[in-house]
Length: 102
View 1 (cartoon, rainbow, N blue to C red):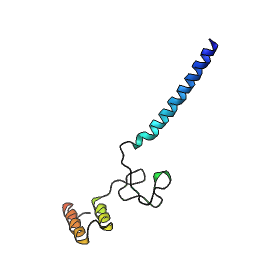
View 2: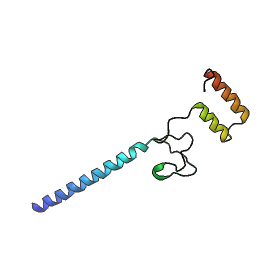
View 3: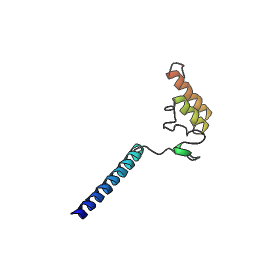
View 4: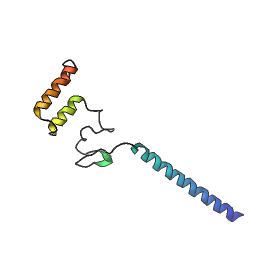
């Protein structure tokens, strides 16, 4: 009977430790589910943050919110997605839609 109690106690502790490890892993990975990875061409720094700022439009605890339409437009011009004429047309349209207020 005593040997059976030792085995039961050992199994109890093994199950308890396994349950704690499982819970920690679940809590650590629950925030990452469904979130697309942020592409940073220069590589992440410590704790997933970039050493020299963050990628344009990146969302996370270190950003100050989503980009404004004017920031998106400026970024698209800077990366060469649009030319200067298109930039001016789109900026004028944005200003017109907002009553001249950026």
